[in-house]
Length: 295
Image (cartoon, rainbow, N blue to C red; front, side):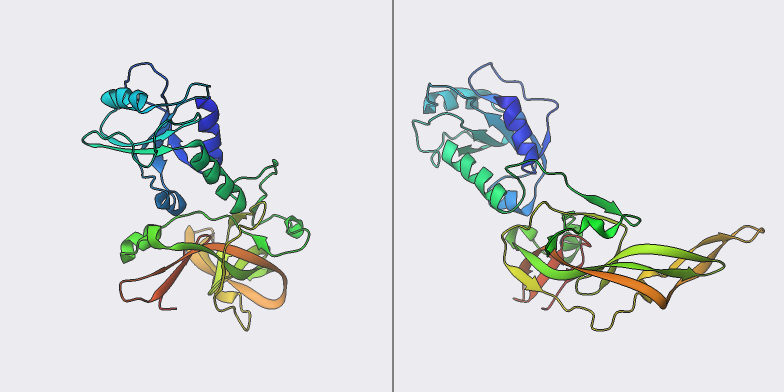
């Protein structure tokens, strides 16, 4: 069952490194992989980067404390999670202890709850659906049916580390926003027609690509200021090389408002909401990774 657990964990968004398994004696408990990256949701469950994931495998025989203690004798230093796919004869909240080994044991109920929450917040679907990916040239037909449509986050929290903020203490939320498919002209040394996506989420942001979630997670919703008067000039104008026959020079290509067409769609942007050391609210949206402070 170990390989099935690996596939399920990956589908649940757990980044696993399945190379270089620890050297342990053969037994009931088998190695699944090593966590390489951790999302805020996993941090809240006690999972950390570098944690070794193990499975008891399915079977009628229960997993007792003695089996854990025998396995723990060979377990390498560090953090470990055992997913018990069989009944336990001891309290998982009070596992065996060995120096320099941090052990977390999930019972069948705990693992089932983990899967259930993933279904509720949209990380796992009960039925296979394709994720729609779009680039700047993609037709607006991807937005079909009633909105709002949920965008998929990239989960880049590097700016929080630079600002001394801890995403593990923040709560996931959804920001009510808008996205526009803007069609118009760039005017520079030449004139060309463009079609671009612009997200309105606490400011206008040019999106070169994005993905849609199959359905919106069941999370609290927040609002950031939306643009009262739309002006795509700054966000869509470009400074790029242009060859004039004497070499490439950087030239401005300005977006021309006259004649523009903007199709609007209501969207939900995954985000995290937290407090800084002064009690001020901050939000980071998971699509553009923009940090909004002092809200």
